[in-house]
Length: 517
Image (cartoon, rainbow, N blue to C red; front, side):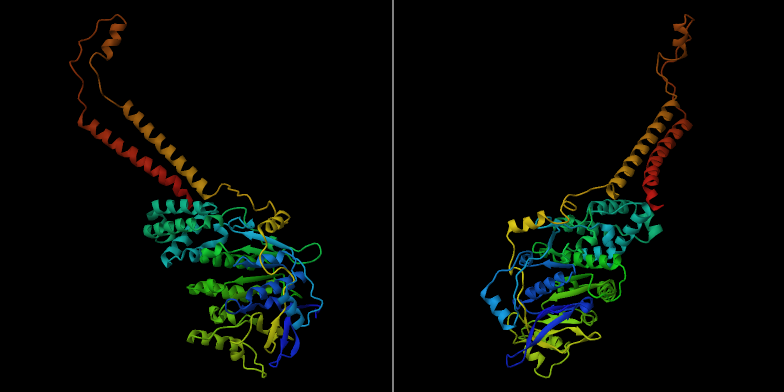
């Protein structure tokens, strides 16, 4: 049943229920991307699990998200259950061996796995704008903020760094607009409010250091199996925009950091993007174009991307056209939109003369799917109605104790579990503001002393005559009162006060304005 260089998916059958032939995904086409679709409860998660198992056994690292919380069982040995044994018998899987797989658990919140973070600088203004659902004007301000940070040597690591930089931009909007383009104070304020909302939704857990190293999700074991990185996403799904932005960031990082490898014998990494519709919902055109570009080019980096979603219409046509390996579970066709989805799914397959693809899609049972993979020189195989193989690992979640045991022996234990807050934009801006305030205070004090030194006030009983009395000489007649200052002296004092105030303000702007240099 198992063949070298191939990943076993299941066994196809003819319309009369006769077993036909095994269906494989050739590893050399594993980086040509794929799509797993189907309605809720039709078996998409199990298909994801058996594909992850197959890639791991072939020495290919895997990254996937555990949206419902039941994918964690891939880290435990499977259990012999009647319906699993029956499926193995139906497809002729003998022997049906159970095994556990090398798993690394990750969690943005650090509760069910190792903390996973990135910095604002690494994410960049485009993805941050998507995360904040920013308007064009707000995205422009964010681009300016990142440019100011780059030119001013201000690392943007976490949310408080960006908040501090935005405060500075708001206070110096006029001066900065002359150099970088118009900066609206209202846009700055709107971004700051959005950042507060992100913080309340838990995004502050995602931004900071130590940032995730891509190599840590591309590990293999001593026996040659690929590690399966499982992201705990059940809590993360409460903020779907953060979930989608995080996965897109990770995909972009893989694209930026990995070298070109062409078409390897097997992928360097396989990336499963579950609930893929969240990536494209209300996405601006520039973001969809970015996804299309990454998916098209990341293949040459040896990375296979597999989108998992309910409806093939969730994925834009430009992206859908690049997904050569397809597993289509059952779809419902009650509404016009659902009927359109069925037709779209059927039209993407290479037809099989033995059955009507559109009719079969609505009649597939749980754990059954239409399968078409790339073969030969990269052309899609004829679509086959296939019984998906049962998993070798546990079908269902780990207990909390089992999960903790896996975390305790993880190869990345201790690398990401503690926050590290080094000097960044927040601290640097605070120091510069404090230095500017001290300089302004000193300037004002110096000006005051000079004013006192130039004073012409004279009090009765104090003057040159007292000095003469003290030396025993005859005192001169005293003046009755004090000398009135002249008009010129009063004017000079007024000018001095104005100069002192302006010098203080200019120093503050001058020091903080060094950011623009």
